[in-house]
Structure formats: C-alpha cells, structure tokens
Length: 412
Image 1 (cartoon, rainbow, N blue to C red):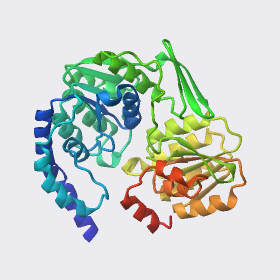
Image 2 (cartoon, one colour):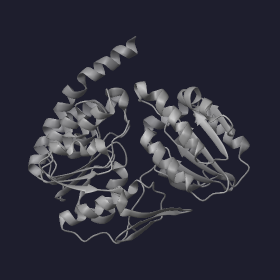
Image 3 (cartoon, helix red, strand yellow):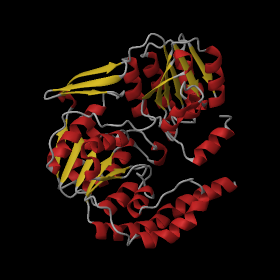
Image 4 (cartoon, helix red, strand yellow):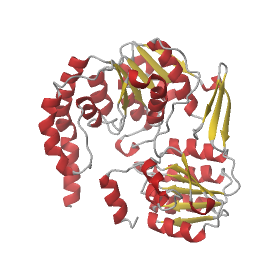
C-alpha cells in the first residue's frame, strides 16, 4: 500500500518538478544558442549518437547518458547524478539556478538523444529544445504500458517533428513515422531500406554495402543500423561537412552486442542494455547470421509491455526458434509463462533469477560456446562472473553504485 501511494505521488509530481529544472535549462540555452539536433525513436538512438560522434568529434557536444525529461535539462545545466540515490536531489535543486548562468560549452552544435517513456514527454522535450534538425528512425512497443496503443507512442514522438525548425530525417519503411511527417514544416529526407545492397555478419564485425560505399565495422551491429549509417551521411551533408568514408573512430556503447572473451574459451556477446520487441528482433536476427559452431542464447523478460506482454513473449519464441540454437536459457516469470511453452522440442531451460542462470552456466559450459545475452534484469552481473579478463567488467552497462547494490541483492 505504501509503495503504491509513493508511486502515485511520484507520477503526480514528475512533470511539475521537471519544469523547475526546465526553466533554468531554457536560460542556459538562451545564453548558449547551439544548433540543436535531436535523435529520437524507440531504439537505436545511442548507437546513432556514437556514429555521428565518430565523424564530428569535438565539433559538437553530445548528451551522453541523458535522454529524458530530467536527463536532458541536467545535461544542459551540467548537473550529474553519480549514485542515482535520493540523497542527490537537494544538491541538484540548489545547483540548478547557479548552473543556468554558467559559461556555455564552446561547441555550437548540440546532439541530443531524446526518448518518450510516457505521455507528454515528447511535447515537454520538443518544446524545450525546438531542434533545428530531428532524426527519427524507429517506433516500437517500448514502455507501451504507459500508452494506449503503438499509434499513441508514435504521436508522442511526433512532437519532435512538430517542433523541428529546418530539417528532418525519417525512416521511410515505418508507416507509423511517415504518417506523422505532416506535422512538420521542416524539409524532410526519407531513408528507404532498398538502398542497402548487402548486409553481412562477420566473426569480429559487420559489413554494410550501399550503392555508393561499403562500410566495415569491427563491432557487431544489427541490419537496422543501416538507417543510422545513411542518416549520418545526410546529417554531415546538411551541416556542410564531407561525407563518411569510414567509421574507424566509432565506439560501440556498452551492452549493444559487445564481444568479450569468456572463461573456458567461450565468446560472450553482451546485448544486455535493454529488451524490447524491436531490439529483440534486430539482435536475434543478427545472431542468427553470426558464424559460430556452438550457439547459446540467454534471454530475459521484456518489461513494461502492459497488455501486449503475452503476445510479444510468444512472438519472441518464434524469433528464438528461427535462430537454430544449440541451447536456450530463459530468465524471468514472463518468458517462463509465455515463451517456454512455445519452444517445445528445443534444448531450452528456464530460470527466475540471474543467480540461477550463472550457476547453470558455470556448471554446464564445456568450452568453445558462443554465449549471446539479450535483456536487462541484471544479466550484466552474470556476464561479469564469466569474463576471462575481469577488467572488461568496466565495459559493461549499469556500472553506477545503485546497480551494484541491486546486483548484490540478487546474489551477484
């Protein structure tokens, strides 16, 4: 009862308190006057940000680790949350007015990753940023528990088009996105999948071939990353820079299919940043094409799906079955209830906790397996115990103290 009352109060005051920080962020933006470029959509935003950063480098400022109603104003004001605990908040309230009048960044381009986890967030952030450029490449059932339909999610993202001032780039293969383009007066560039001529997954990288170029990455990227590659070129052209010839300076964000050496001569593919229907499909399709002899997959629940929970976890079973895996390990009550019954005939086992998954892997790995981890729910804590080089744990996601404490509570 107390927990429910607290969550209700938290929701009631979420935006009213956010307006306090927004006010001071607006003052700082008026002093700074940057060219604002918003990257939005359900998935792929952070990878796109890193692709753009690999080309623009120090010419722009980037909203790393900030994409929300609070995160973006904090990033503009230079406020940092280090522990993610309640005790930080009094200091943040006191610092905000002072930071509003600080010397602005030297860069005149601001690349902002912006999400829509709840209704009104798109309008709140779009009206704050009023971007010169909006880039919107995806919309899917992410945080759909907070929305009535997929169309309502797309409408909320559409505010970034509505407030866009000059130039927008959208995914022409997504009807939900193209339906929203009438809301903008900006020039709109549309990317179509047909421009991708070849996609190839290598043992230590990925290759994309377009009509004009071939890009080889030393990282694993899903086929959908093609849209981000094409977008990077369009943005550079708009800004007056040379087109992309290579992405040698690209650095993959943590938890997006990073590859590590594991114990017993295993290969670990870490995709533990999130678990949504769209990201599951993209990453599993990539893993399906990955060259390995003994392929295992460790898959966790997808959360915040609301009434779509059963349907999406049953769809997940088909994606898993199509991968031709040697072993499937499921984790969480949703995969146990909905996904497991759909995988009869496969070598599959299910657990409720990450500690059980870790115990099973430590006891049953023979050596030489490729282990693909997809989903949150502390799977990064499982990987941490399976790394050959323990210092690689610094390259995993959720390194903040609050997450460390939560992993310990789960026996990790």
